[in-house]
Length: 75
Image 1 (tube, rainbow, N blue to C red):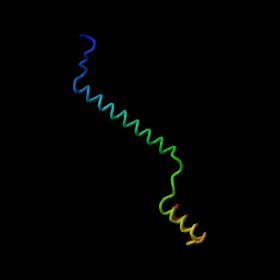
Image 2 (image 1 turned 180 degrees about the vertical axis):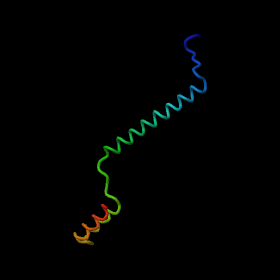
Image 3 (image 1 turned 45 degrees about the vertical axis):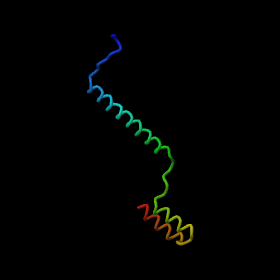
Image 4 (image 1 turned 90 degrees about the horizontal axis):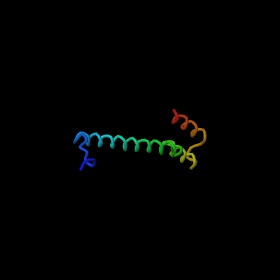
């Protein structure tokens, strides 16, 4: 029956389709991750900054020491 049978390029055609699918889905996944990261909101403070904030909040260090250490962390 003519019309429903297509030989294509054999195994090379199948390999090219497989590579194209991997590239397509990989690109789509990469784009999704980048969009999610872009719109996920501000980053949280680093571990050292968070610890410094907690020490200041508990009263372990005063405002002057806090400002000096924060400036040093900011580099």
